[in-house]
Length: 276
Ligand SMILES: Nc1ncnc2c1ncn2[C@@H]1O[C@H](COP(=O)(O)OP(=O)(O)OP(=O)(O)O)[C@@H](O)[C@H]1O
Ligand SMILES: [Mg+2]
Picture 1: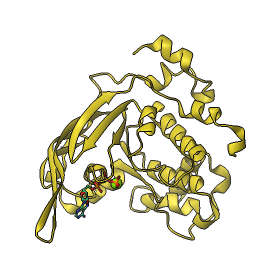
Picture 2 (picture 1 turned 30 degrees about the horizontal axis):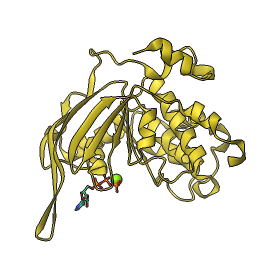
Picture 3 (picture 1 turned 135 degrees about the vertical axis):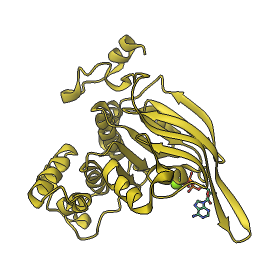
């Protein structure tokens, strides 16, 4: 990685400034593989017709990578993400999550893994309506018997603080902007300290400025060492992550490292002020 070039192109990162090569942190080959997929296929039966949503997908994702999965509508992105998130199972092929073959797990174990190891962020936020930010973030911890009420509250407050919502913890879903609701969803995804964050069109409902704010949050999480898989149909957004996997008709047609990594904070600062 051209560290020198990278640094000169970087804006002031405030608290995270000075991180080695900041955004372009290189993942060593020795880093643990969090995701290993081999020849994944997913067929859907619709009446007499079989839809081949995934036609043999193979790749690995290592700990600390920020990967964008890109492709046009219907290319199989959500189908793939649902399998990676253990919300769905493939028709054939192998998926190992954090070294464990998902096929070998029963339904309960998969649900447990999903709750403990994976944080989801969706386009439509999926918050409970008329429920406070704090209660929404506490939700995944309710299923974790090792965490008592007080710890649940403290961890949730900490997660909300991390996403910049310390002053909105008692606001209900309908009392927050789209960007704030998505921040709550990200705090909820973080609260269980997952090994993997999966986002499906996480900025799809947001305006440009708010999208950059959310992307900037993902970049901070990445710099803090989180593994992130970010699905989008928007080629612009792939420039904010370190690697792009492109799907077409259920195949991987490109898998490449991003050379001209863009800082979301910088993009945000470059927006015209009158956009506010
Ligand atoms: N439950 C289902 N039953 C039948 N077909 C499905 C199902 N889910 C997805 N498909 C089909 O699989 C293909 C891939 O769908 P998928 O939702 O993964 O696309 P996508 O890349 O996420 O698209 P978008 O950008 O529009 O969200 C599509 O042709 C879709 O019609
Ligand atoms: Mg989709």
